[in-house]
Length: 332
Image (tube, rainbow, N blue to C red; front, side):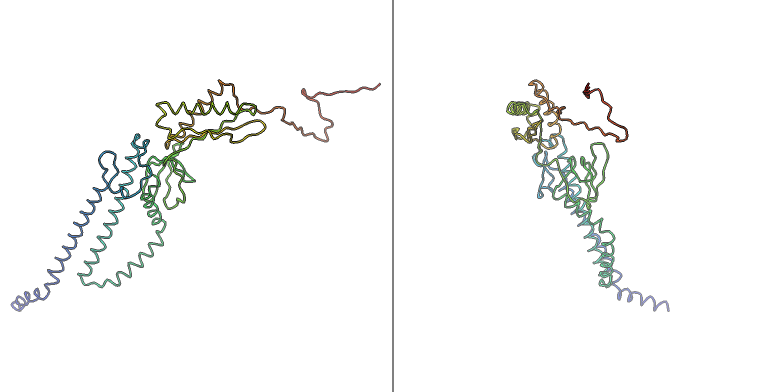
C-alpha cells in the first residue's frame, strides 16, 4: 500500500507540474515586475517633481502654462518657488497614485488569469461596484477632477490673493480636494474645489490702482489734475517705488460732477499684490499736496438743507424755537 503511494507521488507531481511550479513562478514574476516597473516610474516622477537649478520650474511643470512666470514680486518674496513646489508635488502625487492603481489592476488581472479564474463575472461585478461608488462619491470625484484642472491650468497657487465669492483671502495650501485660504481677519477658510464656480485672482499679471479725488466744484480742475498727476509721477521715479509701477500713471480726467463737487480719477498699473500699499501711499501724498494748494474736499451745502418739523394737530400751533423769527402785527 505504501509502496504504491510512493510510486504514485512522483507521477502525481509530474501530472500537476503546472499548478505546483509554473503558476507560482509566473505569479511571483508578475508581482516582481509590477513592483519594479512601479518603482522606476515613481522614481522618474520624483525626479521630474524636483525643482531645477536656480529658479527654474520643475521639469514636470514645463509643458504647462505658468501664469506668474517672470514675476519679480513672487521671485523676491520666495512665493514663486513655494508655489511651483506645491504645484509640482500635487501633480506628482496624482500621477504616482494613478500609476500605482493601473499597475496593481493589471497585475491582479494577470494573476487571476494564471489561476484559471474566469474574469468575466469579476469584470461585471467590478463595473457594478464602480457605478455604485460613482453615485455615492461623485462629489469627491468632482472635487478631485476640479483640483487637478486647477493645478494644470495654474488658476491660483500659494501666496495668491483670490476671491471665491463667499470667501476671499490669501491662499495657504492647494490640494486636490480642497483649498485653504486665510482672510484679512485671520480666519482660515477651507473651500472644496468641486464647489468653486468662479475664481477672482488678484495676483496674476498686474493690478490697477484707481484713485478718485473729490474736490469743490469751484476749484480749477486743471490745477487739481496737474497736481494729482505730478504726485504720482514723482512717486514712480523714486527708487523705492520704481519696481512697483509697471507703466506711467495715467490721468483719466473728470469721473463725475455735480452741483457741489467734481471727482477726478487717476489710475496706475502696478505689480500684483502691490495695489493696496501703493494706493494708500498715493492717497496720503495727494492729501498733503491738496492741503498745500488749499484745495479742500466739498463741504455740504448748509443752505440747501430743509428742516421739516412734524406737528401734532391736537397740540395747537407750533412753539417758536430759537432759530425761528416771529412777527406780531398789532392793529389799533
